[in-house]
Amino acid sequence: PASRRIQAVRDAHDEAFGNYVFRFGYHGPINMIRSSENTTIEANTHWYQKLEQKSGTTIQFDDIHSTHARLLFDPEASHLAEALVQGIEESERVTE
Image (cartoon, rainbow, N blue to C red; front, top):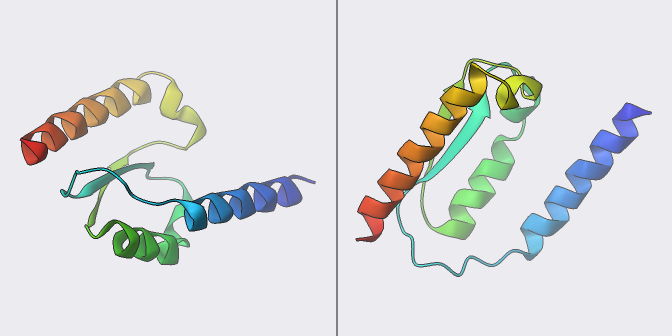
């Protein structure tokens, strides 16, 4: 069933995150782009807290009005692209 597949993905994410070591020189905030209509993301606040602790920085959220599946289709994909470009430009200012 789908619920088992979803749990397997979550378990894999947790394992990967637990083993990940931050090794980059970026010290600005992490910009988390997410769909506004994804209710499971809100339930994962513990994951964001662990990410902030592990990275030593803060997380800023950029919500795009969409479902997760629609983020790859216009007009949502255009909003996602804009958010990515803005985040890259901001990270370049922080690392200069």
